[in-house]
Image (cartoon, rainbow, N blue to C red):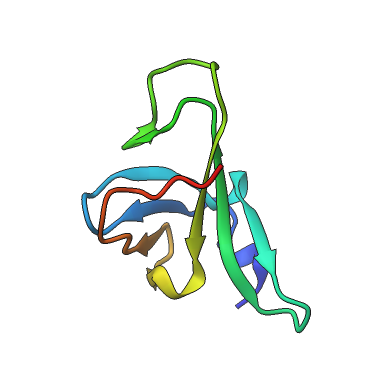
Length: 89
């Protein structure tokens, strides 16, 4: 799969059906051997479903390990964060 194949896909959490963002708006954590380790999403208001409603007061980072990705379709990427979203700042 090419990196360009991921661009524009919506990220959906299987656990609660939350829309987390687009792959095109995310950063990738890539290992030295070229493997994708994680997708990194940045929010200005928190991760309560889609982008939170708290405005621009703070930035939060959500790291989605590559092993959490369950399915990549033509329009969406399904991930499984099976508990409340872990926020890594």
